[in-house]
Image (cartoon, rainbow, N blue to C red; front, side):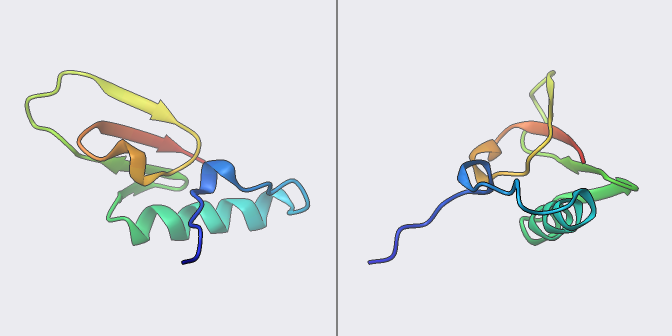
Length: 71
C-alpha cells in the first residue's frame, strides 16, 4: 500500500514561490476551500466554532475547524 503524505510533510524548497503558490491553490480548491481573494481561502468546518485558525499550508487535518489560508 502506498504511503500518503500531506503538503505539510513534503519538501518544496526546490520550487520557486510562484510554483509553490500554484500548488497550494490547487490543494486548497481540491479540498473544497472557498477562495476569498488572491491567495486567501476559507475552510468553514463548524458553524458553532468561534475561532478562525490562520495557516500557510492547506491540509486535510483541518477538517471540522474554521481555517483561513493565506498563501
